[in-house]
Length: 503
Ligand code: NG6
Ligand code: CA
Image 1 (cartoon, protein in one colour):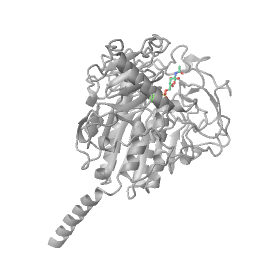
Image 2 (cartoon, helix red, strand yellow):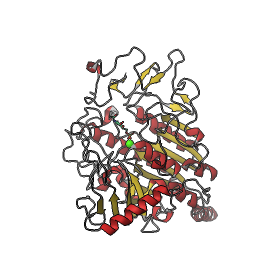
Image 3 (spheres, rainbow, N blue to C red):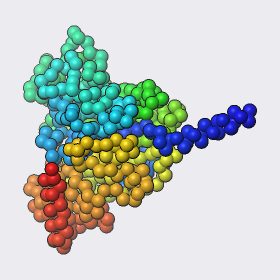
Image 4 (cartoon, protein in one colour):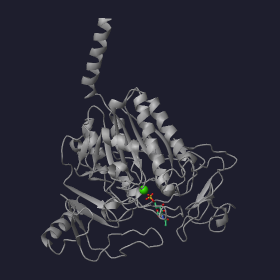
């Protein structure tokens, strides 16, 4: 009896002692269009997100965490490659039939883990292109894609929930494809003989906003961007699509609970079209956008429960963040604006998705590693582009020259062992702009100061004069100090140019 007890105590000690070196599992949960103010742990009072609050409570809640860009594709490109997207043409928001834009001969985030002996998987939204060209056979082997850029396993949808093809692709193949009903996709012209949202708005269960582009092929009563035909069996229903991702994510975790794994779990919430499963409809009181945030929060809770159930919670890093900031009206009449009820998706920030102002790219950012990372709040400047260099450092992997060139090793900040992270960060809104030690400089830019009021209705950050903000004192970017501090403007403008032209 005594010896069994001793043995188990000793094993426990060894396990703890070893876990400092044992490779932790890593799960990145990546929301789509979630704002800095959308979670109760980030100050939201009109909505409660208990599972993310719990994750933040057991980990570090970062107040100064950033995506690279204020829209999806460039943020995800940077997360995968460690390179600023504005260096590479063609990294803007991709249509659903785009070719793969991630280089296959360069280091990527999943490759770092794979080299270190991890099993790597992606479940969820991809939006980085598939195949070698726009023209491709969706019914055959679809490649290159996630499996050629570092993932051993992939279960994705190709682009966004509002773009065709509205199907899942698992390791090169469309899921539930009926060969007798092949899928074709076009972003050029109508194909097939199905009604479109434009021709038959009476068939829609969620109206497309006027002149916003979401009125092409109707799938599951919702108009999409782009045209598709065929694949009736393979098309997802929006109410169950996030649940399918959750089940696949859990399955991946279960399949690899004995080996170190890296899971990139890319959620669709709260991106449009917002169509939660029935149990979440009406639950938030803030309309469907609030409801899908509750669904997203619940999914995070399910992942946390799963790693606890498997007994791997202490050795699993969970990172939660978002690819860009919030938007309300992004193409559908889903009451996101009318039912806001005083909720502030931006929190204290100006701007939103698409914008050069802070709400475009300053996002919720939580890291939990129970037993290793001490809970707390950090103001360190951190960015998703730094995952490659930082996890390479954690896992003793080297980064070859000319790879991940904009990624910095900020591991200490990510693990709460340092109060500061980066000193300088270039982000991308309408144009690239720079932050250095809490000073933010946006170069002069022509263009409207706001997107159209009847559409996304967001402050862009465009101004013909230079903008300089002191984010330490003025997080809401209310006070343009450019005229007062011309030397600071010059310093940051020069630095931005240097970084842009760095080889
Ligand atoms: C925009 C779409 C918007 C959304 C966005 C991509 C229009 C007018 N708007 O072009 O609805 O799909 O692209 O969002 O088409 S993202 O989060 O993937 O970047
Ligand atoms: Ca997005």
